[in-house]
Length: 142
Image (tube, rainbow, N blue to C red):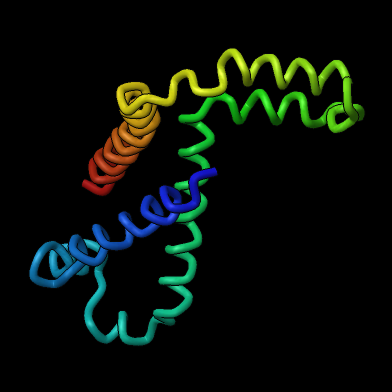
């Protein structure tokens, strides 16, 4: 695993969040839309909020790396075999051959960009579903 890339990928959402929710950018509009004010936010446990946020950012970064690097899946499939770590085992030899042949395949920026956009598309569909449910809920309140 590339821990430097994971660390950078975990910190980037935090930086974007700091900018996004700043009162001079969109923070005031966000608080108004959520029905919050400065007093309600002062009562929140900020350490828990940031702790959970950074934990989830690290989890997202690790999961994204596993999605993008396909060889991780090969290792997880073969590593569960009882004889995987034994010298000369069938699963160990298969893993070695596969990594020799395909170990660095699909590790280009172009492929990473494609897989990143593919993964983000699922977030976009979730966003569309939320917008649809909000519009239906707004219609029901009329």
